[in-house]
Image (cartoon, rainbow, N blue to C red; front, side, top):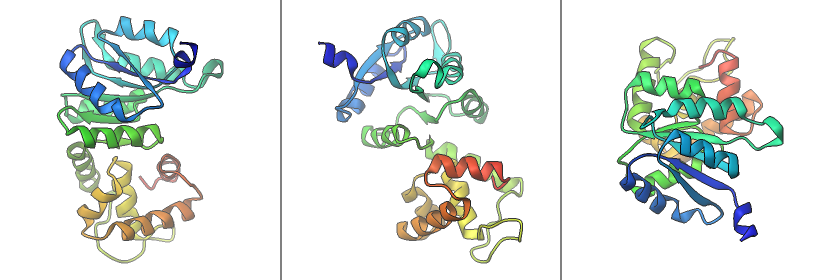
Length: 227
């Protein structure tokens, strides 16, 4: 019993029993973790005090408040008292841009819209656990279009950027899409190139920015004004 209690937990905060059951099916593949379920913010806070939670999957509209309250609390507590940070993933029916931006500003590592097939949701959760930001494709496309509309992405197929920008135009195309949470496969489909081509451009971005992870490359790119 003690050994089971030491396993890291994935906390699901949702008041819909059907969603809880579906998420249990999604998480069945994660054998190194156990699932905890809470229907309210109060229940979630009690569980967080008693268990080591590596990932919290949080709905927004809960009976006793906004799920983003919990996201903000976990983000502010990250790394304190020697504890490993709890990653937060919002999973909800709301897909408007305002809610997405609020969630990301609160500290969420991803934003998924309910209703995706179980295998796809499982892939996205695995990505979050690896430290990668994830966003449902429909939301990612909207965010990308917004960036393009602001003139912050050059959409020509070839060529290099200015002397202040170390990245080629194609590398920036890949970077911008990765930053919105798209996978390598989704980027390849969007750009009409192979997955290997996307991986090659991404490696070039890593090398030029001096990083080794997706989270690192997004942070570095933002710090340098490339996103």
